[in-house]
Length: 549
Image 1 (tube, helix red, strand yellow):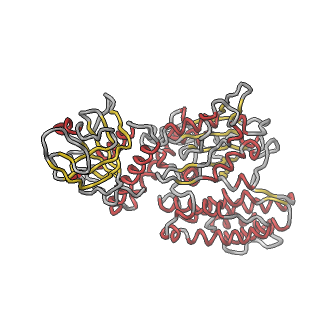
Image 2: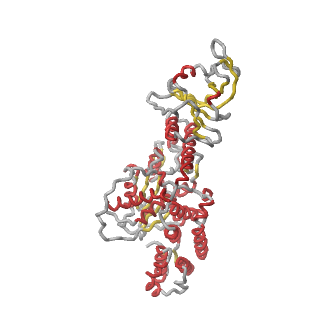
Image 3: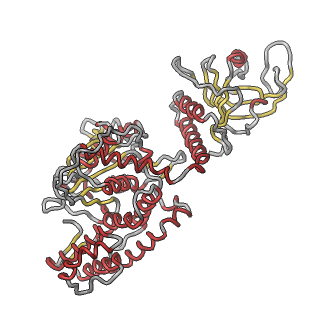
């Protein structure tokens, strides 16, 4: 949008006069040209006449129309009667009626106020944001709402720019403090998750709204997202948990189907999407419990495809292609209720899995699209109950969780400079993975970089630790098999991460076992190093290995 958007308030003493300044067919409205010093042709103007009960949504049409004063009625032509030397003509796009309970926070004087322009006065920033929200309540027209949403986002950006010189490293302490608060809240509920696990969960959600929590039964895979949601103040209806059934072979049990009676019957995921879209500022969790009891690629293929279509709108909202294809609902009488459903930016999918003989393994298609967080560490010590009791957070919104980047084209030069080291490591890892044709592509690269960048910008993890988490969650889960090439990949990765030759093509496993603690301690990537040693030992014992226990 290139045109300015302006709000002009007609004061009470001029309200009656304003009623006389419409053209006979209500196509145009005229007002004193001197009041619109910053106006350009084609700019949008909201003209507020609270006393008369209307707001005009207009576009500047002709400026500097000469006027002359005569007795009698005003005739609206290019030369019109009036008390001003010149007037501006506005094309009326919509006349919005003001409801009785509508409240208007005055803009303090009757000068036109830009709410979307290159140079915006933010002195009365609270009033301007309030005005934008109040104007939005007057119309459900998509064109008007879209313009006002653009104004709001632009104005908030201007506020951030003005305050940017005040930003210091303490700016990010708010998120750090929130995550420490969440850790304490979860502990007082009787669950012992490390601070790094809470941070990792948060960063994974922020990187992409799809997480897999894997591990042995009883480690808190389901409780972590539920308690995290509770700690940040999410209500029960913002968290939906669905158990996966082994007989799921398509999306009908999750998304919905068209019944014989001719209506589309929505299912839990569709309902969760609709609920999340009702208030985009609040996060919503959709938990798929034991999601690999059925083949994920069969019942969740629609989501796996749709999540990759994320794009950013002109109003900075992240949307996707529609979840339901026309073929799925073309016969439904109520198709209009579901034909424009997309995955909203405030809905997060969290799957819990047990990797055993009763479940299905994940394909690379699934693993590439998620952060797979392993939860096999068990702390049997009693939790210290002496810590201070804390309440739920009250100011944690979806703005804290949603992705700042959805594509590498959004990275600035400064962003790229901050993750040069991480990118170099990914190049070396990918070269090794090529040995067994396991290399990853741009999607995995981008998501790892986003994770590392969030961790660095918000000062939550050191870069090596962030890379360590991502190797564990995005790289190693794809390594499995029984060929000598798989063994060679594991050995090469182990040597890369430890920065020394700790293993050869015929590794001395007794030496590795004996020196394991010191090798892990010296490595900058201890979690991944420990897992690779485990995978190498497993290969020697079974002539097959995988990431999953």
